[in-house]
Image 1: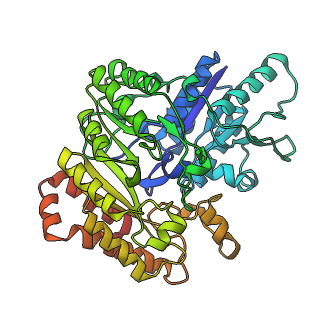
Image 2: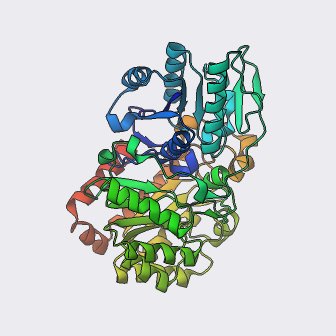
Image 3: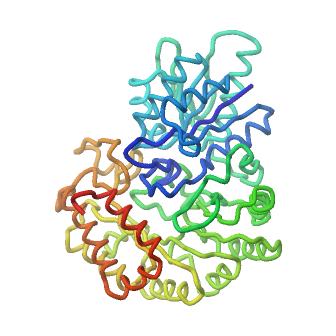
Length: 474
């Protein structure tokens, strides 16, 4: 069969990176364009099962909705599966409808938003179903069912295909059993990067193409707001260092990529494993620079020194909040030792690894004074970059369950930056004002401003992104 996997174009207001925030997606810098690595993983499994696969990435080819529709139809697919996000869902569904009505072939959607709100999708679209959770095995199973019906005839039905919610010809909704998460990640094919134009993917401040790698899944910290634990679970599942090195060799030697972003929720959960990955990079003499996301308490000076030696240039660290009660209740207690956090940032500076601190404002119990603790903490830690986000209650998260009884959520506003709701102490406008204050107080410090001016192009990009997000209220 011919299968088309689709990363729809972003809405006109902002670029959306659908793989971020645990598959709920996030509005990002227009200069950031990650490859749809989730779809490339799915494509690898479909190819291994004998299917023909095309990946359409709307942003990568610069198409709008009509252009993407035309290109998808031109593939003459037998089955189409589209990625989605919270903020782009209306437009994603519009594209899915266009494809479904013009081709008549089964159309499914994947992503965390549609996994946890499938009823909304079926009420407002003609799509056939939703892929729930990890997509690789489930999309392959759907493809096998479509192929079976195509070859043998009979009504198209997806009964007993685990991991989906689907509708029949009468639009009756059927919820199938959940599919177990993949335990042996080494048994999976590496992403089918040959189906992508790898030259077009970029990261702000880096010259040359960028790709992403998922070397592990799951996060044991269980933060109340996190979409990654929904999509990947609390159990840490990992690919062996040898399997990861095999992918790095492929992307570097076969595709000419020198910049890699590891998209693991907590990359250094197993220090020994990361040490082995670093040793593999050095052994293979891979000319790559790479970055990752992780937590302070999973790092050590020895590990940081090895990571720097193996080409790590940047680490994004989840700081979240400077208030210890919020840390314990909502943030997985990532900062139980502030002195260790300070040491991590200092060692990174010493070994030449840039740092970014992820911070959040607007937790349910948070007052302005508590938010000020976060602002003060991040100035004390003094990372190279900082990102302040509004706390967002994505469907299915513990935070959403905590708040959904007394709030109505507009999923289209869940950009990751703007406050969708206020809390008991601050309105949404006050939360956004506090975020703007946090950015200004961090970057306007004389020493910080002097450092930023040493990289004028990057600083200009930060300013442009800030004003795009906040406009006249900046």
